[in-house]
Length: 78
Length: 120
Image (cartoon, rainbow over all chains, first blue to last red; front, side, top):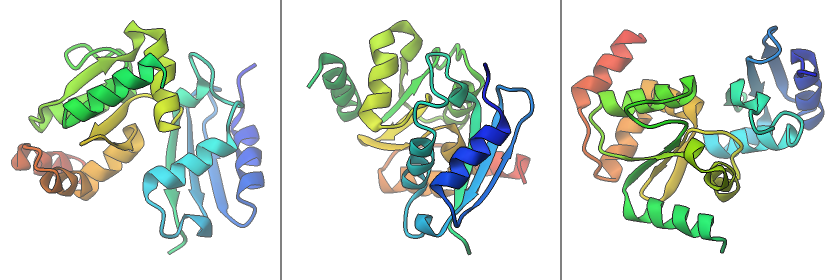
């Protein structure tokens, strides 16, 4: 059963309680997520996005991997 | 270290720029891989392409190697730089040019500027 934008948003909100999380995508396959969180301050993009992928660990990856279609943007609050 | 990890380590050490991707630089087989390969091709960057679809061990091995769950993955001088989103952002912001300059990787500066203009 494909994951929904809502489920991804919940997962990310749990992992980044003070952060700002927005997830789009209604075709069950392609999603775009933006996470703005203070914990990203001083981290480069790879480190920031690793923590987001960690929050989704096992929920979205599979051999074809829904995660394959997650466009991710991360920022520290300006 | 497992042999696939050794192979990966050797590949990223022996080649200054490596792109682990789905398909090949001439024939990418996934939109995200084709975007990154397209940028590198357009900028005239010399790089080794590794088709993870050709070997299931490689497909999983590269994700374990970098603790990064998706492909494509770009490496410059042995360092993991990022996947499609990060490379796209870095191309548009000019950070990719800087990274190549710092690592003396030759590329076509005008082509990089054209990409930015086109995505203005």
